Image (cartoon, rainbow, N blue to C red; front, side):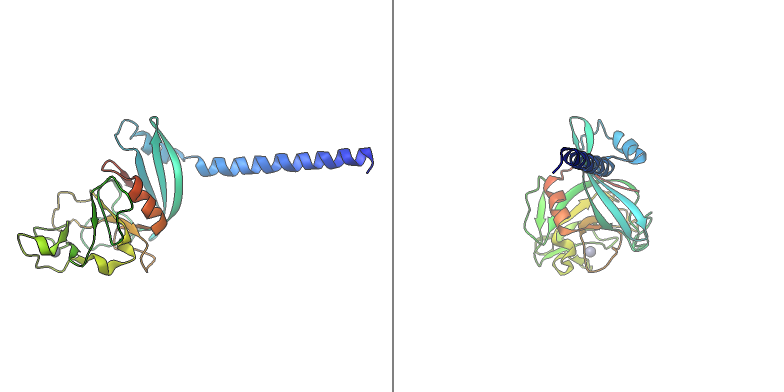
Length: 227
Ligand SMILES: [Zn+2]
């Protein structure tokens, strides 16, 4: 090969390598950068004890995006993102049965699942046949996960039979929505695994793989933020 040709070839290779690095950097930067609105909301939690935030953004109808942020050295960092399903009627929950997902801030209050504890710091209820998520307004067990074999007052309403809700309840996180248990405001707003449908009754659903990771890193300060 002539010296001049080798020089041109070298220039082309250098140019291509440079372009590739530039494109990869741009893609990574876009992927990891946090938009202004999200950044402002997250910055509101700088002094908060929370170190994990699941940020859920509605796209259209019951389709949403869930982004996981973790706080290190007082700064929020993007960790991963995934597709999510929310309520059949979208966001803005107001009452029991409206099939909407609540907007704004929720906190994680506990963990449960049909599958064994994946290693969470939260109290984990491994569901067996006797476990129900009571969603009956007026019941003393409204909005709690109960073991019907160990109750002082008998559970007389139907409730959600957890083991029948596989794969949705393979892993679940309980949230602070209607923590006051006001009848009619809605209950059993969980973050759980994808079920067989493209929507939920008001919960947030993500892939089982994502959910398992979330349960592993969540604690009682973990924020679920929906907008
Ligand atoms: Zn009940």
